Amino acid sequence: MLFNSFVFWAFFAVVIVLYWRLGHRLQNRMLLVASYVFYGYWDWRFLGLIFLSTVVDYFIAIHLEKTSVKRRKQLLLGISVASNLGMLGFFKYYNFFVHEMAELLTAIGIQANMPTLYVVLPVGISFYTFQTMSYTIDVYRGHTKPTRNFLDLALYVSFFPQLVAGPIERSHDLMPQILKPRYYRPGDFSEGLYHVLFGLFKKVVIADNMAPIVNTIFSTPTSELTGTEVLIGVYAFAFQIYGDFSGYSSIAQGVAKWMGIDLSWNFKMPYFARNPSDFWRRWHISLSSWLRDYLYISLGGNKKGRLFTLRNLMLTMLLGGLWHGAGWLFLLWGFWHGLLLIVYRIFEGEDNSNRSSNRFVTLFKVILMFNLICIGWLFFRAESLSQAIDMLGLLFSLDYSFTALSAYSFSMVLFFVTPMMLYEFRVERKKDLLYLLSASVPERTLIYAYFALMLVVFPPVSPQVFIYFQF
Image 1 (tube, helix red, strand yellow):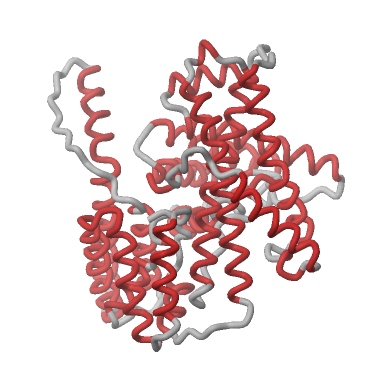
Image 2: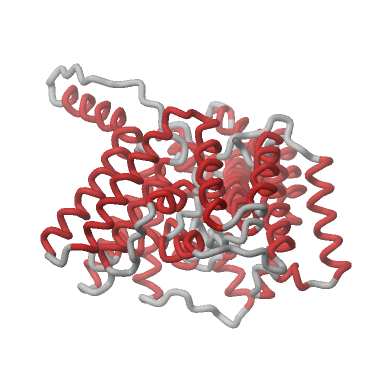
């Protein structure tokens, strides 16, 4: 049930009308049913996975609170982590590891007939698995009290606006909003409208119009491409994935806001980052903070010396890459970002968020960081390792001639992306993510009219599924 479909908005219209006519308890029950309908619309058979994950963590969290024996608590937490990662590992990584094991055995002269299965990847499994896992970890650490109401926990796990592509919410942020009565708050409608309209603009106008350019270039044999075409294709993908993923998160924020629930910001103008740490404070914030709090810090963070800190950064980013999918290219993408974090940490020090007062230096840092990010996107988007290597070679070649394809693609990227980046630059300068809500009436009207006009006049030829649904 896509956010940019009439089916979803018809579904949500029914939900929101019923929602504000019910008391708190019935609101939660209705939202739980709506969330299961939302997910079941894709494939009802996988509702059992969400239910099973909820049941396991419900009982484990309660027993974690009851016991004070450390070893028993560690055992209970281990069961929760193993069950969640076990489900995630089977559906997401089973065939990958079986295939790689067979390749390894064949390489050393052992003929292996490894069993493979036709495994359908459940939509959003990485998101809701991490969300429910963080609940039991927080209960174990004493940061969250376990809920005694199973249905309330089930709603926390399956809350439909952010169920299949985040943001990955923490129990201490979302659970209190579920447990407490919610009332209509002045300003919720206008803020929700901003999130929804801007999110639809980024998804439908930016991402879906970049998709044909990206698909054309990445489906063309590299022997037929020039360095210019590859460069434009990578830039187009950078804005496609940003518009697609941040658009989803923004719409989720807006829909939740209309129900009196605040979801976390998942993106904060990431392409204005000055260094890798700054980028990960702006991009997919709910995942990067999850990896920091539950993985990087658990590995020791920066408390065990410089060498261990660099090791922990690399391990965290490698696992962050693997979270995105079972494939060597995702691992390479994670390795690249780990390498960037390490190099910048070595040359800029631990606190590499420094901002130069010199505008030209700042501009140079932003442009450099954007291009380094785009090299990572090449690995992320490439169809194969050989294609990634060949395209990388073209990027560093001297073949930067303009062709009909590069001229058309470049003009489309400029036309669709430039206004959005100018707007985000203004937001960045204002240091207020919601500055538009307090802007002058003419400015607000002009920007909203632009969003709406572009949605009406420039819909994509063929709507695209959200990229992060595959994760």
